[in-house]
Amino acid sequence: MIDVLLVALGAAVGAPLRYLTDQAVQRHHRTVFPWGTFVVNMVGSLILGLVTGATMASAGDHHVQLLLGTGLCGALTTYSTFSYETLRLTESGARFFAVANVTASILAGIGSAAMGFACATALFG
Image 1 (cartoon, rainbow, N blue to C red):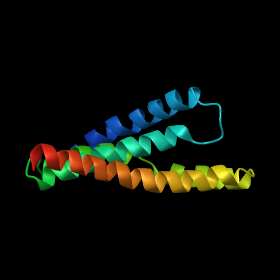
Image 2 (image 1 turned 90 degrees about the vertical axis):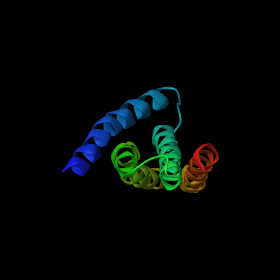
Image 3 (image 1 turned 135 degrees about the vertical axis):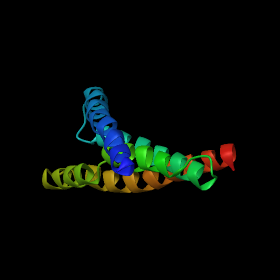
């Protein structure tokens, strides 16, 4: 039961944080590129890399993984919005931005997770 509560608590923070971050970032960019979703996905990937690296180095436990990894990052990041926004870009004729969104999201997401993992390993490993 504690595991479910930790995931719910993390998600309760992650979901509004995603919404507020998306709104704040999009306000500063007058382009069709979905910067808000891109930013939350990169931040979530970085945090998940940090949490995973710390957990693997025995600096974090199962409960931290559930609270921050599954709960917070699960609600903060959004594959469904990324997919929808990419489809919307394609349908509106902004194919360059659609391809850029997919390419940048995948490469930067993996890079962010790897950077977080490497930082946690350096700090705790």
